[in-house]
Every structure is written in structure tokens, then in C-alpha cells.
Amino acid sequence: MVSLKKYDFIIVGNGLAGSLLANELLEKGQKILVFADISMKSSSMVAGGMVNPVTGKYLAKTWLIDELFGLLFDYYRGLEVEFKERFFYQTGLFRPFANEESKANFLNQIEKHQLHDYLEVQENTNAYSPHFNVNLGGMYTQKAGWLDVPTLLSKIKEKLIFWEAYKEAKFVHEDLIFEDSGFRYKDILTQKIIFCEGFYAVQNPFFNWLPFNPVKGESLLAKIKDYGIQPIVNQGKWIMPLGNGTVRIGATYSWHELDFENTERGRDELLSNATKILNTEFEIMGQQAGVRPSTKDRRPILGEHPYHKNMFIFNGLGTKGVSLAPYFVKQLTDFIFLQKDINPEANIERHYPLYS
Image 1 (cartoon, one colour):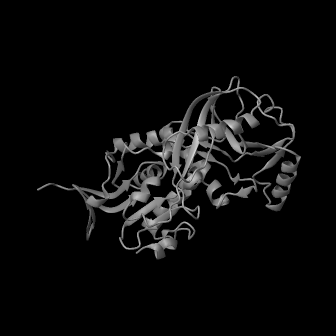
Image 2 (cartoon, one colour):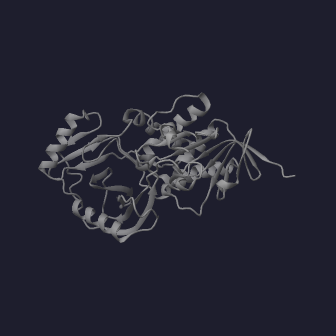
Image 3 (cartoon, helix red, strand yellow):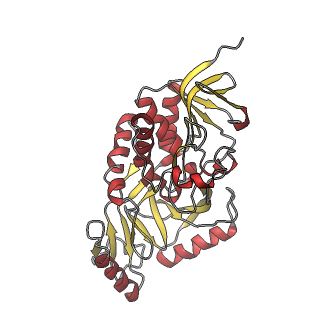
């Protein structure tokens, strides 16, 4: 008779959502096992990782702006201390005004939406002028930056391996057996299971009824001579400094070709926008593509399956995953351990009527 290995949690998926959740559960003293299918490409490994409290041409405040941005900086810095590694960069973000009409509109939006706590107008833009057209000034966001997602995930993976909590294998949903005490999967018994599969959740038979709306994104890696600008620069597309003159140029959005393949169309779109805002030469070093796990209402989905108790999902973080993840990791763990309510706009219960 095969002896069964017992766990408190199985986590399926080790992208940003699954990794941060796994780290939190380990810190709570839980015995966990993370399934990582390395044959499936991960959007987390090619993510720009940007955090930005005010986005879009109408300067919309990020949903839950105060809750998210009151937490995420200390959260990621705490992880840097834990892992003795740098991966979070609060660089700030600068948005040059494209023309007088755009400038007037943005200044009006700042007043209309009371964005003074998050945006300041900068007239003296000499620091940007060697590389950008900034004659009209622009807006600066201090509470912005980016997370080096692959580096963070690699550190969490090392921790999981150390605690024998990491399994490199494809999780076969059809092999999951429901038992009174939880779930059995091959030679494993677990009390609870959490699916953090990102884009691949559309193939999960337990949760494929949810209204996912994945969106593909592409970015370019480029080299700019003597580029020493620290903030991200954003004017339609963004230029993110990675150090040593290397930048990431992003990003595109496509709801049709949901794959991880680079396209000429994506490259041309990014090049066209970059040449409009950069007045200096740059060399393309590479191109990356991924599929963001977005939803139709642009809100995460987390909570318990409507029928299968102790089966959970943590998904749909979409384009703002780095900003959303710390807050909603806590929301989900508080729900599981303390029976606290999940934000109704993110709670899977809002979609229960779709289940049949």
C-alpha cells in the first residue's frame, strides 16, 4: 500500500499570485506543496511589473488606490529584506505633455479628480531633455516603479525547494479525487487546494466557467547610449529603465492571438511609439510576449468554489498584478483562516450565478 504524503495546502501555479501566496502560507507555518509546470510559459516571467497609481488618458485613479499603495511598497521591501536581494524599484514615473491641448486637459483632470497627492506638475524638465521632447513639461508620480518579477519568483522558488514545498510537474485536474477530509492527488492528501494558474485557468474544469478575458502583451528590450534617466517615462507607451542603458519599451494589448509568440505587428507598434517620444537613437536587443490573466470586469477573482468546499482560486490580477497581489494575498488568507469577507468586487461569489 502506497503511503500518502499529507499537506495543508496544494497550490497549482507558481507565477506571481501563486508564489506570493505560497510564501505567505509558509510564513503562517502551513505545510504546502506548489505544483509548477515548467513546460507552460508564464506571463509573470516576462511582465513589465509596473506599479502606477494613476493611469490612462483620463488620469483614472487605480482601483483601491489607498489600500493598495498604502501596503505594496512596505510589502515588497520586506521581501527584499527577507531574501537579501534587490528586486523592487520605486523609480517614479514622468509623463511629458504631448501638446498644449493635452497639457490643458491633464491639468484639468488633476483638479477634477483631486490628484495632488499622487501627481505633481513639473515645468523644469532638463533632466529628460537629452532623450525626450519635453518642452511643455509634464507630470511626475513619485509613488510609481517596477518589480523585477523573475528575480522575486526565483527567490521564492529557492525557499520552496528548501522546505520541500516545490514540485516540478504538470497538475492533471482529472486525477484529483474528492474525499471527506479534503482531496487526494496521486500519493498526496491535502486539506485545501488553491488554483493560481493565470491565463491557463481557462483550461481548468473546476473554474473554466468564470468570465476570463486574457489579453496578450508584447514589449521590447533596447539599449540607449548614455541613458541615465531614473523614472519610467510614459506617453502612450512607456520606457522603463533597467540599468546600464538598458530599457524596456511597452506595452501592446491584444485580445485575439492569445499566445507567447512575438509578432512583427507588436514590434512595429512599439517602435513607432518609441520613436515619437524618444529623440535619441536606440538599439533593439530583444522582444517578449505574454498573456495577462485578465477578466471581463477587470477585477481579480478569488475565493471558494461554489460547490467544492476547500477548493479556492486566486486569479485575474491582469495588467496591475504587482499592485494588486499583496493586498489580495492578505484578503484570501484572511478569508481562509479568519473567515473575513473578501472585497465584493473581487469575490468569486459575484460570479456564482454563472456556475451550473
